[in-house]
Image (cartoon, rainbow, N blue to C red; front, side, top):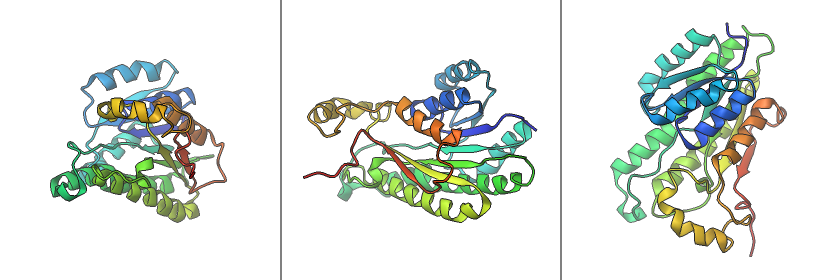
Length: 259
């Protein structure tokens, strides 16, 4: 049995997932890093960054949309560490092609929903069952599940409808998991990023640079992955242990309603 807590992070090869892995390693977690492939530059570069903090790094290749593959990945983690203390459900994609709602295809809808919603929900379900069992096995065990959603859960973008719907669904998933798992002593949180400068947003950067400067985001800057990682680290530390089910929006003020 691993003495240190273990964090499992999906979509860890870049962006928010990568920053979260490094931040959690600094908080004392060993890291199980899940990405579609472990043979990529992002994962190869992440290992040394995690190990720099004295943490173990365990890369796992998994397409989160393959629900039949989840059990093997979770078994591999448990065989190596004997525990899962924190799940950061971060994996997600944008549509391959932005198209108007009236032109959205079923293929694009299914791809986004399988990766952004169905996969994370059933992965969290399997991890939660293991956490319930581990509560009886590990002294002072503090299991946590964090869903990474998006302001697109509540802000309409009509040329990527499938993404908005997937994040709205994942937001509700966080709520119902928090409700159900509260009786088992498992904390569940939603972290809702705003406009974050990542590979996913690179193709719209020029368009939104101007809008952000004009005040679309009250703090007048892009968010960066480290902004989200700080929130995840705070939840992992136990700073919000009497707040299960809470939504933490990290968006530079996009949550402010104004006339």
